[in-house]
Image (tube, rainbow, N blue to C red):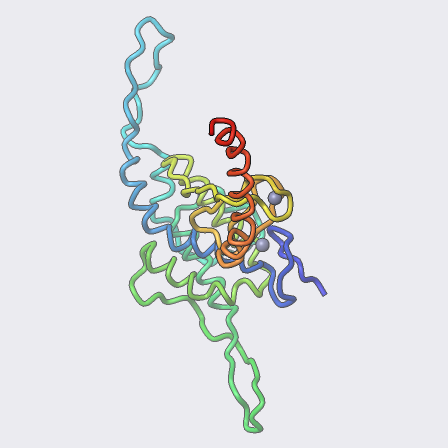
Length: 247
Ligand SMILES: [Zn+2]
Ligand SMILES: [Zn+2]
């Protein structure tokens, strides 16, 4: 029985391909996409650099739009992905990638019903295509995918879904440079003792940059309350002899 997350290799439930932390991260990426797309609008026009006198010069005048942004925000074709395991989505626009995945997942969700003897059974597929409640924009598709993510993580295609949304995220961040916020925590790591615990936006856990150990916010608070009084006392003792000498 495989109980390892296919992305981060931490332990997870036997019925899951992604652990809760990776599912949480994928959900953060998906829910953040409408905001990211809005931010991308500001990067549509490439910033004009200063003209270089005496340099090699530019053979062509600069393009009026940043094609990388256009690629991301373009309409594309919201068609089902024939091969979600392939690498055919390298330059897919946000909408097309999300719609493709939504349709793919929709046709995989089984009908769950109770038969006459009261036994829970699964039947043929529930949907022929994904139909978001609010149109076909980035917000509608990302909302749909967030809703079905708990189902998707129990299916083998959870891994290419995760990787393609991550790749999309990387493409956007290369343009906007909007990185998730990171905050260093006060207490040292309970495993390797390094002062390297970091809380990052969009992450389920507080993780150690040095050894990879991870704690929930509740676990961190309990750990901090346990170790910090002793560490603070130690720090105070290191100051005290100077005070005595002065007295
Ligand atoms: Zn994981
Ligand atoms: Zn550590």
